[in-house]
Length: 299
Length: 302
Image 1 (cartoon, rainbow over the protein chains, first blue to last red):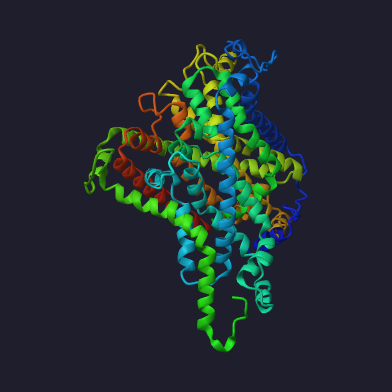
Image 2 (cartoon, chains in turn brown, red):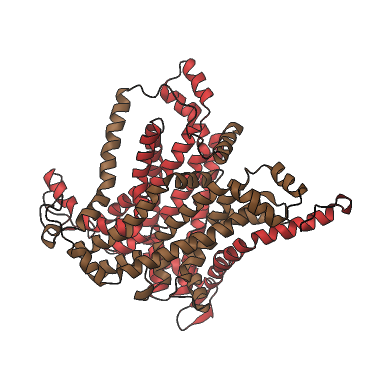
């Protein structure tokens, strides 16, 4: 157990620490079981990628190709017609709103969670254990259940139908604090002690010692929050109704309910809503993976 | 704040400083957490005892809960939700463990590739995934009907989402594709962290791969399995976007789930009190399921 912890600590402190450092040498033997497994895996990969392929190719298909009885596997006569029709709707505004929601939620979450996580890990204040268990218990609760009172609260605060109604609850979700606590645990106490002896105040210690140490954690949390906020459909559905404040997810849903079988424009919307976030995910997937795994330790 | 803690002044002063600093650092996250999670949760419990609609707000005690258990649609939704959980949770766990065990020993690049592929449906987002599946399942222009007919599985087009016999299974299929991503990432990391000296010792002693897996790796990845069981259960219980966008609970409530029924009552019928009461019941059910899983995993682990 302690070996595992030590390894996690090492990979935290050292960004480039290899994920697999106990290389298993029996691996590369190609047993029949392994060959079959890999074949199944490749078939599954193709099946899993298919919906995404279908979104992207579908968005370039003509009406004729979309409605063909025999599926057109590849758009041989690509058209931008679907996108032209999409941008006659306020699709750019929807995309822009989503980006604002994600960026604001990401920024606020990182600041609040970095401070809170550090305090929970390293400050021995009264009520710390209680607060920590409160955070953990809240994470196990279904977050969609609180949407009813949350809607009333936002209406009371006059925030309903503004992007804040989506941003604030996202920041409140306890996962970030929990994740940052996990990362802050790895800060050696001696370093904090040394800073105190050198006469550094709390703020100085936090900025100069703590922040650089938990930077990988903040990166993980940032990308995690961004992607989660992008796809949090239910919260957006409840909080945003005006066409002007719709997010891209809501926009696609609206397209679907208004033009139910016009799959061309719906796929164009789906592509606009998913391709940017997929690119962001692929660029930062290392951070992302680390966030998921650290968030799970002792979940 | 800038001076060192004077030792003769005693523990009390140091403790007070630690408290002040601790709470100041906690303040931003506590503000959001209490304001937008804890407070609404409390309000949810309170409103569940009220008859709360657009026009009314009267205390009715446990009436909402009584109505709920006489509401045949709620019972149907509860049964469907449990079917979804009972089918999808074990499949998700076993499938992701299998995938992880195949890919974790590959070269770094290949592992990353497969991990990404299985995570893609999650990143793509429930709405984009749902609308494309709606097309794939479509009665006239969907690929699924074409492929099934070409393979000779069916002879005439099937209305996958419109048939009460198949609709729920379509939902479960999509749910599976969007829920294996995170468990695979977790299992890959857990399997890579298994203490390798034990594995080597076992193979020296002549243990087969199967034995090594169940006797040595499985107990070590138990905490991960537990975590995955809990998050997958929570996610499956809250299955909403798929239902709302694909079937709206139909046909004839065949795909009604608790989460969708809560949405329907609270936000379509403006029956907030009743919706909250169902939310509380859902939270209790999830808590019970998680507790059972914890108990089972604990005893299993000895």
